[in-house]
Length: 472
Image (tube, rainbow, N blue to C red):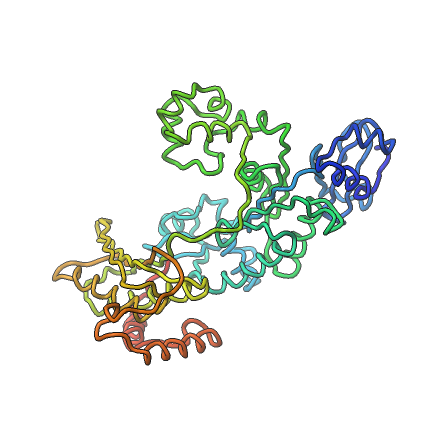
């Protein structure tokens, strides 16, 4: 195959000198072969340049075939890390008996799929698909109710692994984030690619979850790259190849381009990224508006958006689809209280509060009703949120009217404020705040279902004689 040179001293000399890797300079400085390929083995962790007439098919160090090579491999520093089928993977990790079975995390019957493992995906099961449709495609699937608090704990452990590599971590959701590893070579003693593979191995070994990594020079390319080698994958896209690599691909691959925009582009005869790059900007502006130039650049592999650590949620919400339609205020009130508690817990965990609440109700014919109210002061207290929300609910409950879904959310987020007397019927009660704080402590120790209010208990007793609703 040719000579093998352990890489990092050579790579670091190039990277630290100017921040980029120029093979001609490295070859002249170190006398390396003209044909040399940057290579990284995910099996043994060795990295280096392999000289020869073609890229390496196996690792010269361990003979393993789990190798990655790329002309820009040691110079790329923007990564997208994506947990593989996160919720389903956690459930399989916690219950090894599910390892070879199709697993769906979500609600039953009238619920939706929150996550599907890769076995279930082979049957065509996808996220956001109605559960009844998923079960028709995969009748043997195991349906598991989401455990969001548990997933959040594991997500934090994975996030900590990212933060150990770089402070420039931009979360996108509970199971994915962008990382900028620029300038971390000296700190870690290796290139970003090597550091990422080490982190990937640690997450797999210590947390029991696999992640897929996309490595590139820009966020959009890194996001697309992480989808190319799943699960437990590692895929790099270089800047020099970006435009040609993107050209034949559908415009739907572009990070940040929504389904509606894709539909309008397709209707206008623009199907591939190459079509988009070559389109007249006036036509694109008519289709995409003021974002036309930016999206055209993304299709050419140009993305100047930085990895930013500031990511403030716009809203926090939770909703439940019922097994049977509900029409009584008592039943709906109990379900609403559960949602208010969940939203409150998420607000407290994030250290923020909501200034406006929104109640969502879906009729049996799928008609959606939403009602909102701005609070006198931002709060994270469950009893205040519930007090305001139940008034909105009361106004919508009428004879012969039923609902298949209820949802509750808050927005206008910010720091908690001192509550106003108008926020709660009967005025603010410090006793209720102290009681809620004690309940929070108990639930943190014993779990989110350790305590129930009288409404929740009565509703639970009724559900024991039927089928419980499933969260989405």
